[in-house]
Image 1 (cartoon, rainbow, N blue to C red):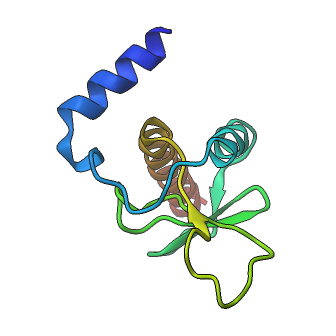
Image 2: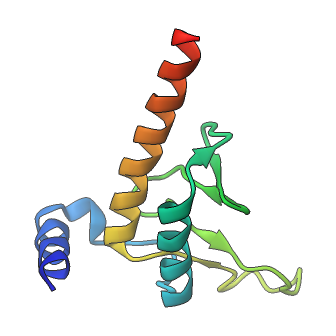
Length: 111
């Protein structure tokens, strides 16, 4: 309950989170949270990162980041094929992405 209140206060105080390009999807939100609990972001480049078994878009933060492209869709149906997690999950994923990237980079430098 407290995390939900904090998330709403955060979103209300950060206008960049008000507009989102993709529709919210509860299943993707839950899956991304589960993936972040069990895995680290790997193979990070300017546009994509891998976490667990998924390769996700990380650019255009916050309004189009961490979107998931649905599989098994018609090549002619380009509407509704990408979904996003909740705004709070996008914020948490960005923090984790930066932390995982910094940790990996520092380990490589120290090796």
